[in-house]
Image 1 (cartoon, rainbow, N blue to C red):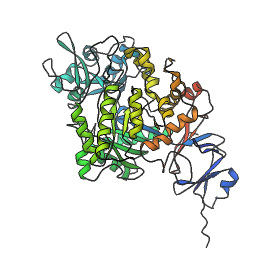
Image 2 (cartoon, rainbow, N blue to C red):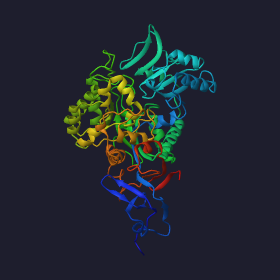
Image 3 (cartoon, one colour):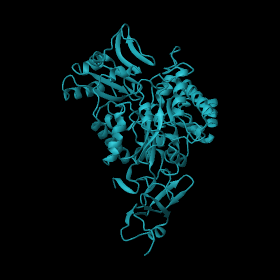
Length: 541
């Protein structure tokens, strides 16, 4: 009996980019979900057996499946059912009010109306909506409208009333309650948002599973095959872990997910997960416990990222420090000692300093050269902080989609010089820090093409150029979106390149991501075919 291995699937007539140092090939063979071999059509067809499936790529460009290094998969799925108040859908205050009013008309009185995506810098008014605006839109419904960044929200009167928030309510630590004169204006930031969100009815697990499936299928349509869910527990507590496991068992987990467990005080699910053995590395290549997430500051565009220098025109505002130093040091040490990698939110240089120091202390007390602690977003590090990250093996995990969507906001709130230095991915590449990239969806759309465009041009949606020296080559941008995304999850040996032995997670596009013009890359590029473990999971040919 012959022991010859026949491929399960062969892709032919392609323009296949295998990886930064691996070059291109014409064809690729898959066996048992993994890349068996790569080469020419003729070479791969030698692996054809009686049951081998053949897919003709018709000359199209293919790459490893993209890896979004940081998004909120459950929230992405849930947001797809909310009122869309992004700049594209609702560019004016009137459009926001009208969209909320329309949803309220379709919603029984007393039930919540939720919206997400506005950016006051892109609005015609240039300012946040107010409680009065939302009252006008939906006087009989509680309404919560979340800014694109997720760190600022606007509540109407009914929402504030249900949450028990009044003019006399103390501002929680690490939070902001907006006032105009002596009256609530509806604005809530950081920890204060939780007071209103806690009044929203909890979602059943089945609804969370639906969101995982819906969000995951959308990612596949974009060529994204892997992601990190960046704050598991934030929406539904420990039930989110149950939802992920149920989704996987039912075949309703569309993409590979690396879980970052919410570790914030009062909301943490880490202790319960640790008791169940759900530590970093637990699981399999489809669903794995990755890291612990702690929020240390807010967003730059919302003027709540913790800076060491004040925001433009606000000399008293350094942003929001979420937790005191000693508490952060203790939390990081505890989670590190429990066996977790950490992937903590820090945007401003004040928060980055706090986090690097915490990581350095933990690694000094319990050395682990391959723990790969991450700094999520890492918007405004100093040169010295970058050097310390390199020395300690700390990875920057930025989302270059922020430059595209919010770069003009950064200039507006920080000034041209500081705004231009946002998210210095070129510097990190030169230093060998292996930066990854993503979208932070639903903060930004997970659409990878504006992200790629910005990595190679450093231009915003308006065309503003932010520090051209930080731009990457096309090949570097793809490496960031594939190989380094895998590296950030300690998974570079199983995914991120199309080489023998790695998962056959493949995205096929209508344009050559390396050769096409930047504007074509941004505006006209589409994913036409996605494979996960050698199976076609999206087909738009």
